[in-house]
Length: 338
Image (cartoon, rainbow, N blue to C red; front, side, top):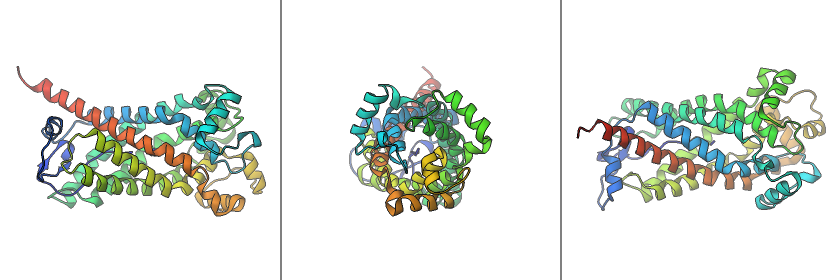
């Protein structure tokens, strides 16, 4: 997905929900920020899972057409009818030549995967972050603790999302033989076996772990600048999340290109590279990309990836923090006697 929970930052005076540090420096706070900081120090697991699921579903649903374009623009040997120079031009061409709803093909399987994947991710991250922070840094948040928590959460997230990514990307490709997610699953299972759904798993992890490191560091640095009190501030979550996602996406584009090749097993590209059978392994994917397109091949679709990821992470952060705030506040209010 590349999106994740808040709470990384420098030590502060106040403590907020989920054990996140809040800067107690000078300056006024609005009522919403104060309410956010006065919430319980530990939101429930169900709150993290619900907020995470909503964030994942909305993020992938809203940005799915751009994701479809990104997948096609990363093709190493695209069909002449599927060569694009811009995201807008690609969307217009796809809808005009293949049907209005074509950019949304595969959305259902992505939604089915994004909900549980993001629910487990946020729940794992929040709880591990809190536990590890107690071990590493009793006075505040530890970047090491948050990095380890994010990496562990990524293992769960990608274990669920990788099969959905395989099906989704095969349905997104130009002239795809798959008309439904179920038929795609059946075909892949029958012709390539269960391993096909996890052929790019190690590449996905190799991409997402550095992605999350860059994402967290950038997001928390920006939060310290624009939201030092660490209160519920939608504008700061949107700005920080968007910029952090864009930077992380650009830096990890080469890995994303390799992941797309492993997921789609692009027939024409493999034939040109004299690859017999199925391509497997990140090292083989890297060699194949370079063989076909040189260094430039590693950055195919970078514009679409950044344009996709920037609003995606902005949506994810803002939706997650909103639902976490609302659900925890509701739980607190329901316990308050009249």
